[in-house]
Length: 390
Ligand code: ADP
Ligand code: MG
Image (spheres, helix red, strand yellow):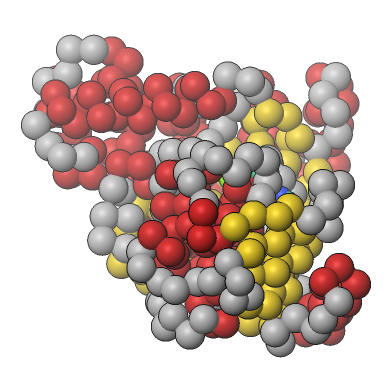
C-alpha cells in the first residue's frame, strides 16, 4: 500500500465513521493480515515461525466512550451496528464477527485496564477464511486503537498476547500467538523470526524485489469442513508426543535427537506429528541461516520440503493445496508450500519475478483442468505491522 492509498483508506473509514456515529473519530489505525513463510503448527508447540505482514489491512476508526457502551460496525458485513456493553462482556456471549473486537475489550478489561467503551467502524482488505489472519488483523487493530486512546502504554508483544487471549477465551478459537504477533510487530521488507516460547523476535531482511524474486500467495478459495476438528486432533497428538517423551512441549526435542525420539514413540500417528514439528522448527532455523547468508533462492526447496512434511506427516494438506505446489514448481517456481492451518486456504510460492506470470498461469490452468474454482493469486510484499494512520 502506498502512502496515498493509506491516507485514502483512512479518510474513507473516517468518513463512514462520521456518517454512522455523527462525530469525528479520535483516530484511525491499521493492522495487517499475515502469511507464514515457514514453521507450521510449530507455534502451538512453543516453536519457531517466520511470518510476514501483508499489504492487506483492517483499518479502524475509533473513539472512546465513557458510558460503558461498545458499538462496533464493519463495512464488510450487512449486520449494521452491533451494540454491546464493555462493562458486561462474557466469554462466548457475543457471537458472529463482533466477538473479535468485543473479545479484545474484554481481554483488556480482564487484565485490569480501564476501557470504558468505544465506537468502532472498520473495513478490511484481508481476505477472510483464506488462512491470512483476517481475524488477527481485526483484533490487533482494535487493541492498538484502545491502547493509544486510553493511554495504556502496552507493547506490541503485550497487545498480541491480549489479542490471542481474546480469540482463545472469548471467541473460542484455540489459535497460537503467531498471527497476532505478526500483525502487531512486523516491519516492511522483513520477515519476523519469532520464537513462540519466549516471544523473542528478530526482523530478518527479506527484500524480494531487490533479489529479483517474488513470493506469491495462492488462495485456493476452498475450506474443507474437516479443518476445525483436525486442528484440535493435531494439537492433542503433539501434546501426547511431548508427554511420551517426557518434555513440556515438542520444542524441547532438539533436531539432532529426532531419530532417538522417534524410536521411543510407539504410536505411528504421534511419531509422524513429532517428526513434522521437529523438522519444521529446523526448517525455520535453516531459512534464517539462508536469508542471513543472502541465499534467498535456496529457501525454495526448504519450502517444498516443508509442504511434503505437512502433507505426509501432519496430514493437513488437501488436493487443491498439493496441486498448487506441484503445478507451480513444475512451471519453474523455486519452491512452494501450503501455509496456515491447511485443509484449504492459501499456499506460498517463491519464484523468480520474471517467472511470476508463467507460474500464475500454470496454477490457473491446473485448477481449471482439475475442475476447481479459479484460485486468487497476489504477491506477498513484506509490509508494516499495526500502526496509527491519523
Ligand atoms: P482467517 O483469520 O484465516 O481469515 P478466521 O476464521 O480466523 O479466518 O477469521 C475469519 C472471521 O473473522 C470471519 O468469519 C469474521 O467473523 C471475522 N472477520 C474478518 N474480517 C472481517 C471484516 N472485515 N468484517 C467483519 N468480520 C470480519
Ligand atoms: Mg484467524
